[in-house]
Length: 425
Image 1: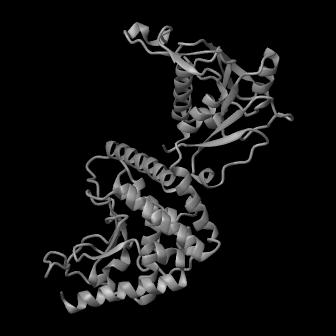
Image 2 (image 1 turned 45 degrees about the vertical axis):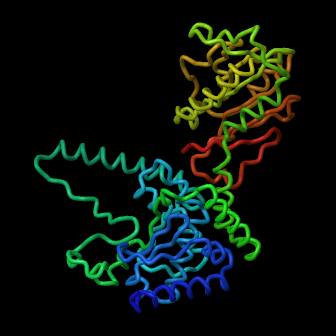
Image 3 (image 1 turned 90 degrees about the vertical axis):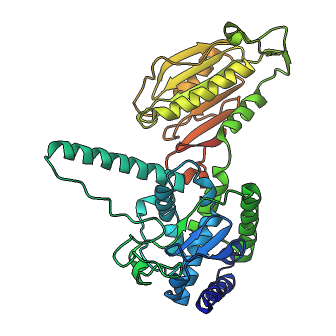
């Protein structure tokens, strides 16, 4: 092993020791990341179980800068950014995660080397929501570029000018590597974003590794005391993002239904036409269920949210078979009422609305029927007026979250329960 390389490892270990003493949360989590020397990378990378670094990069950093960049990479691990990438474009995901941790890093007063991009509009957003916005912006920019090319003759396009998420652009002087290391000026990385997120190793036990980091984060939080605001919010978002909102809706609905068993003697009529005989619930038939859909402008502007909600309600109706399923489409009034019987498919032909928001009409409609439903599930952004008196039946508010902020702090409601529906799911 080359002396300067082992010295770089010692510098990283020292930076981690200082971090444990100064900021226990980051220091304890960092102990779960194995340090790996990697002369082929630009600066550093983290894959959830390892922290790789270029020895030349480490030699070019001050002790404060090493501590800061170690904080940043540890934060990505603590927030599960490696595991949460899933099917997303890795380069764009790196950019989104950078914006997500920016306010936390700034709050921690870290002196990061290289570029430190931040957009204050993203403060408090989770990485998934930021990614969705960046993806939309990229699509709009590409469409604008295509339109411009069509309107002009010639005009060959230029590249985006963006380097890899973890380092600077490749430039002159990078043609011939020596002894496995880049020959570029070790200070060139200061013009780019330092550190990148990489996929976990193929042979990694993701569940075990993720659990290890989660437990380390809990230990770090206890050692640190009260976590700073931005970090505390991000940790809550990470935990809430793992909750399956669909399972919550199903559990809520099933708890309201009274049917207790399945029977093959009365197959579910919905599937008979396809030659499938599926058992149906038997026992005392449950009261009607109500599903209310907020069709104000802010909700109908995102039809995928409404579709996802309707699909789940359709599944609940087919499996639990309430006596009747009433679906209400409401803005400042009940614009449409659809009634479904057991075995029917919930599939609205049109989605009306687009006005303001009031929850009062839906509950007034139920009261006019003279029979309480087993429950009401209401899809809405909660930007409306509530009834003065709580109903006598359980209510579940399904709230779309376009930024990820509700994942950390679900909105308050005067009655019922709230489940957050990640709009980026």
